[in-house]
Image (cartoon, rainbow, N blue to C red):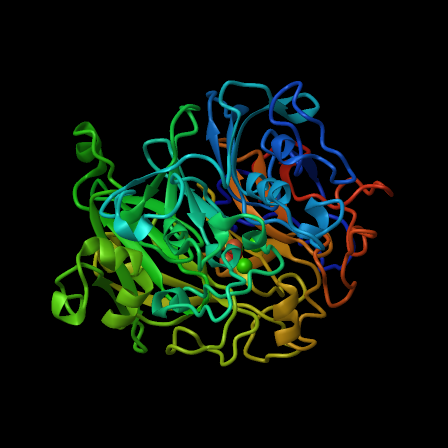
Length: 576
Ligand code: FEO
Ligand code: CA
Ligand code: CA
Ligand code: CA
């Protein structure tokens, strides 16, 4: 088979059946290799992972974090068989992270959790036996205690960011992106869940409420042992989260930068593309009824960088309005424009960005069914956005009410220019199972639900990963029983065909998508294997293997999030 798939469609592999086994399945003729599971020491001689979860906080800071998510491979060799893998660690499962689960909380346990969040930078290379982690000067952990700086309209010295202690940490790093100048961007999603208080009578103010900050922060309960996360005692600390953070993986001494011009929401992803020399960053705010945003740099990015300015600091943030007639517009979130005036209580652009959600409400953006990842077609620049599931409010762009299975909306910016302010949209993929929803046009080779991660390879295949959570299985009642475990599918946007490529182990979502330049090694992440499920119950500290024991199946071990490298046995292009 040729690599371009000309004339016969892009998909040449045999579909993997849906399944519920505690295993990871790839198509015939393919191999899957587990790489850098949670707890792997990032340096030679670093602390080994202990299968009873007795590693300390200090040890966790020298190991791969937990719950791998968005990821990018930065090649360092011509063939692409050696490079830096940069990946997010979204959150922690307290049952798996600690020997004794979350029955108690201590500063040591809070620090272990903080160190299991964030980002890992590791060098990897391919050898006869497969891919390996390499010791290198680039290997680095960035986590919840790492010093950070702020840039753009909101400075670190802004009074709304005046919390106790220095600016540090990135949390709930969900999806990610990468820039044309070789840096990684990581997204802070459900940061609100780490803040709480036991102070009697405390209630959230309007802005805290808009972002879901509340008194309870179970199961983390960090505020009980670390005042940094006590929202009553230290309310401004929360304003330091909800940003997109830029990391230079090739400068191990660099300080990560929170790029405030991109707004403060629950950022799922930050997908960077280029149009007319400018950078355009698409970002979803993953909560039911929230919005999708795009940032456009004020000038071509090369020109800004030549003047030592960051293209991510200078530009305009927009939020999308999807009209029911298939058209759409980008509405600017700019102080002084439209309703965002001093007369309406807005102070300046920093105020608009700290309160991005409220600003987007004011301009009349369209509510979406949980906007997650964005992918831009490499040839025609069409934009694809996963709406994972939701209540179905907001208009025709959410075609089901409720929408337990989710869908993918696609749009073409005017003249295919990603900086344009108008677009035309349609629904690319309506997920689900025709047995429960006859409007779904899928069958045994491709039924799926809750699309989340998406990515395009250079040939134009769209890869779709799913994140059916236990809660959405309940929402659908039994509507997920034929779909089984989370999966990855490939699709050909030209023909509309979708085909199941991989099925994950029990309890896990499939996320993180990046591919070597030769398209012969595909990296994905298996997140939260063994999470409580309706079918298999709830793991406990005594039995962390109740749902899954992937990937090691050690009778004394526990499930571990991990990266998986997929190759064709004949060394060919993935998907062919
Ligand atoms: Fe972190 Fe919306 O998934
Ligand atoms: Ca996600
Ligand atoms: Ca999700
Ligand atoms: Ca997740």
